[in-house]
Length: 455
Ligand code: TYD
Ligand code: MG
Image (cartoon, rainbow, N blue to C red; front, side, top):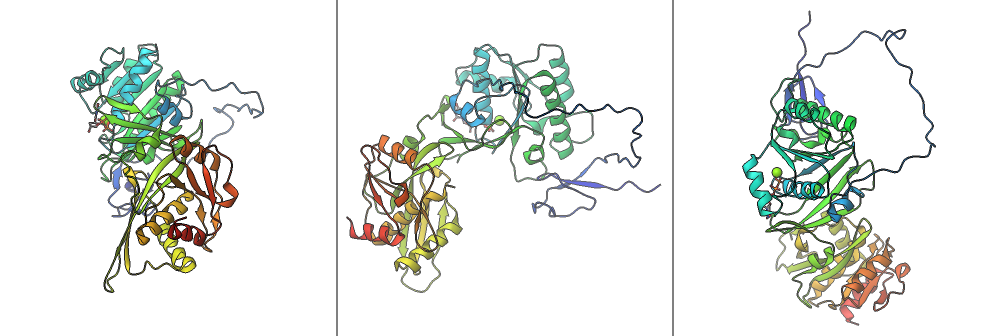
C-alpha cells in the first residue's frame, strides 16, 4: 500500500501542499506551513440509486421575512454590524492582541444580558477571576452573564445542550479551543477549523448569535483567522493604534449588510466609550494656523469624519536622496501627487524631504483626500499657513484637473457643523450649505495659486 502523503496547511490562507516549504506558494507568507492530520480521500463514485434525497428547488422571488436583529446595546457596534446581531449567524472578530476585543464583547454581552437576552461567555484565555476583575472595573459585575473558562468544544457543547440556547454565545478566542474530533494542538489550522465548524453548526441549529474572537498574529504557529473567513457570515476587524485612544470597528465581510460603516470607540479607564462624533476626536488638539496642516472631510461609509493632514518639508542642501515618509496614507499616491505638483504646477520637491502624517493615527483610503494633501504640501513648501476655517477635498487626475467626488453635501455639512466656514471643492461639487463659503478649484494649479497668493 502506498505510504500516505504528508499534508501541510498554511496558517494564513489555509491552502494545502504535500511538501513543506518556507514560504506559502499561494499567499506568500513565510513560515506558516505546518503538518496536518491526513484527510480521508474518496475515490469511489456515488451510487445514485439509494441514500440521497431529492432537493426541492425554490424560487428566489418569494416574499422574504425581514431579518430579525438583536441590538448589542451599543449604537456604534450595531452600526458596524449593519444593524445588530443576526440570530443563527456567526461573527468573527479579529484584531491585534490587546486592542480591546474582550473588553468590547464583555460590554456588549452585559448590555444584552441586562436587556433580557441570555448570554454565554466562554473564555479560553482568561480565568474567571481575571474576567471578574475586568467586569468590576467596567461596572458590569452585576450583569447576568453566564461565564465559564473553558477550552474543550465538547464540554462547551455538552453544557449548552443542557440549557435553553442563549441569544448570544461569545467564544474568546477560537485559537484556544480544542475539539477532540480531530488530533492536533489548539491553534493549528485543523483544530481552529474543526472547533469553529462545530460551534457554528450549534449556532445555526439553535438560532444563536455566535461571536468568535480571532487573534491576528504574524507568528505561523497560531492559525490566523483568515482560514475562518469563508465559514462565518460576518468578519469584523477591531483596529487602532495602541498608543492612541480611539478604536475603529470595521466590517470586512457581511452577509447581512454593507461593509462600509464603521463604529468608533475610545478606550477609557472604564472600558470602551462610544464616539458618536468622531470628527471632534480626530481634530482635538489642533493648533490654529500652522503651516502644512489641512483639514479633510473624509467619508467612512455614510458618515463624514473630519481628519487633519499634516505635511512637513525639509529642504536639503546637497544632492543626497531625499526621503518620503507617509503615515496613514498610500505612499504611491503621495509620489503621484508630488509628480503632478511638479509637472503641472511648477513646484519643486526634488531636493526636499517630504513627510506626511494623518493625525491621531487615522488611516485614509478615501481618494478625495488628494486636494487636502496637496494643500498641506504646498502650505509646508511655501511656509504659509492655510486659513484655519477651511476644509479641502477633491480627487486629482494625472493631468492636474480636480475631479468631483461622492457625498460632497455630507462633507460640507459636517464641516459647517464643526465650525468651518470655507471649503475648496471640485467645481461640480459646489452646493449651497448655510455658513459655508465655497471656492471651486478646476485645476490643481489654481489651488496652488490660491494658497501662494493667499486670497
Ligand atoms: P482586551 O479587551 O483584553 O484586548 P484583547 O481582548 O483584544 O486582547 O483589552 C486590553 C487593553 O485595554 C489593555 O491593554 C488595557 C486596556 N483597557 C483600558 O484601557 N481600560 C479598560 O477599562 C479596560 C478593561 C482595558
Ligand atoms: Mg482578549
